[in-house]
Image (cartoon, rainbow, N blue to C red):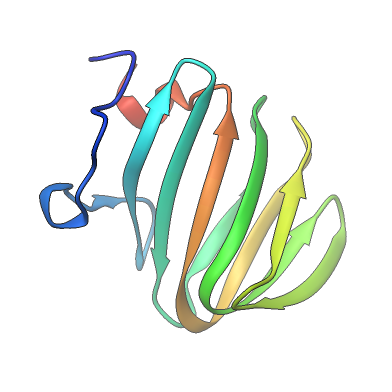
Length: 114
């Protein structure tokens, strides 16, 4: 697997990968220090609570989500965002179908099959 993505990434040319029940993702660019991922949720889908050693910042591109980070829950909608420090428990429930744009540092090698 490449350690850096192509320079230009066209949505129509990138496969959506399963990322949970009623959740899919598209990897939109990466190098060893950074990764951007679009995550599409159907209404009612759950982003199962989990931790990882990566810093994460996410933007709500569409939809409504109940996001829980380290025991605190907030309702977020289009235009909102959130930050997750490494190793904090976090997850979400999709209240209205939508997409999140997730950024990770360093790269999520597990998303690349490494």
